[in-house]
Image (cartoon, rainbow, N blue to C red):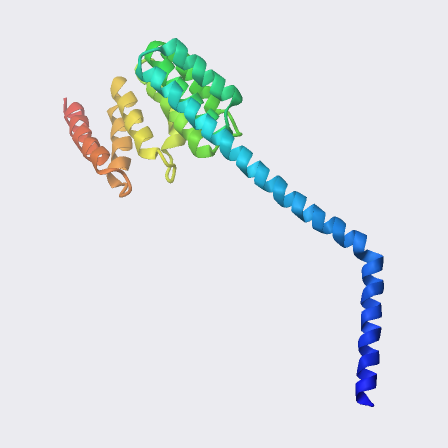
Length: 217
């Protein structure tokens, strides 16, 4: 008797399953097709992005080669093309490398490029700081103390990634105006910063000797 009930129960389950499939089969088929299409679309997207990155990398290397061959006009054109059409990462690299090449012949224009990079909120803050530091380096011999303070003091604060490079340049700027007290303060901050590179700390210690000698005059 129990076998009969079990067979009836199984038959009922099969009927319900068939009814369920008959009612929702189109939905399941559509869902399966959507999953397949999404998977294929994602693969196509990834392959496309990889191809773009490889093409941008090749274009960047070609622009670098033009720069190495001392062809500034051609190199600049190649970098500009990459800035307009390359992937975001290579476009950013092209902006920095293009500015570095321009600095050799037109420092003022390079400063403008670096200032634009520093003001670009779309790029990582670390790269903005790199641009600020590079612009300050190019202005170090021409700018007055007020301009250099404006450019460098935000980079010289505790915890800033390039603080010790900025402090060294601020000390140099202070030396130019015979402000030995300020030069000494910036150099002291380098010396006591345990995270400062060893070579930079050694230079700071040497320059502190010059500060002391200058004060004694």
